[in-house]
Image (cartoon, rainbow, N blue to C red; front, side):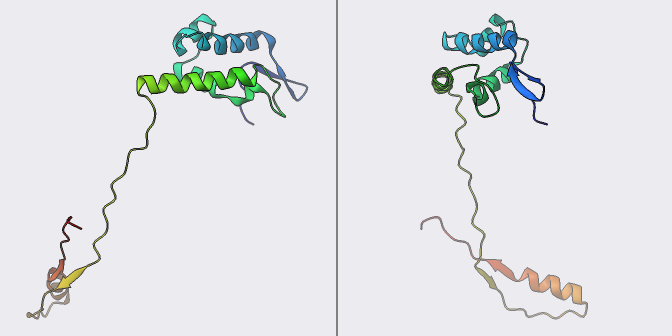
Length: 142
């Protein structure tokens, strides 16, 4: 079964708002919008979560309500928090920018020197033949 987000409880098989914890969730969103850091909002709301847990709480759309979860905060507050998180991430240079990956193109052009020697041992013959294969070096001036 999926974990129930903080601020909710299950009663008779249905998800309901846990009023006491929901107050802390509302306060967390409010304090963050008022300028508190994740750690400060966590402390001011008397929550005992890690920095990353608080960050994930602020990203949970379930708090706006859906067919399964009743709403604890408004959609407007949730969207404002997402905008504020983005602004802070940009300001602190913490956006996860996809780093370009350099993929080396496999060399498909080979040339083989003339095989002039013969060996009685097939393994030595194979080693010799493979040693005659050379890769064509391509310049980066394309």
